[in-house]
Length: 200
Image (tube, rainbow, N blue to C red; front, side):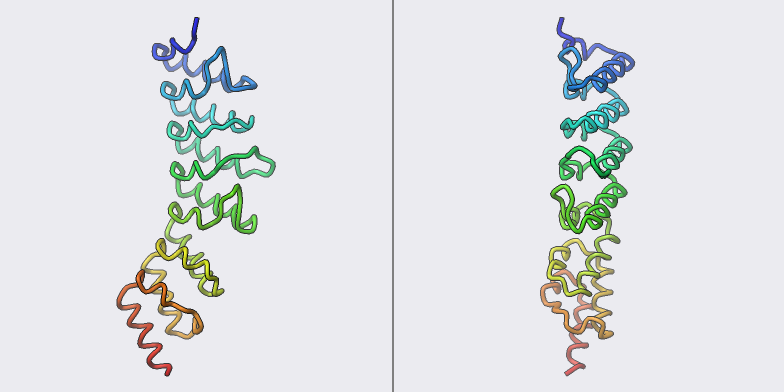
């Protein structure tokens, strides 16, 4: 008997029982059935359980991400960020994560000195909230970090306005803003122009 053939005919409780058996197995296989076989059939809370348990055992659980709940993915991220956790490719999780989980990853990257699990802060830019990007961008501008240019396409109009105001007030005298004009509002560019004009 091939247990896989029964999967489309099982009810939620039976699938849940099978999911637990797979989670408890050392190799992630129960009578020839794997987590991947179950994914299209089980409830997301069962996917969550199998995903987190599988990760703790060092298994590749990336196939679970489209089927897992937000809460399950959040639990996975918290486990992955713990010291001594098994290796995981967090890059694959990014399109499925909520803002809070992306923020947790960004904090870990910063705490680790700019890189974690092969990710750097710039890798998170398409997924981060505007406030986090703006804050990091303005700090890089203040420290004259050339890496700030990578942030420009993701920076909000409000942050560029603040940048123009700081330049006009003299806080960012030596900063080269030329490469940022395509991203800035016309009024902010005029403010910069007037500031430059009046300083000569």
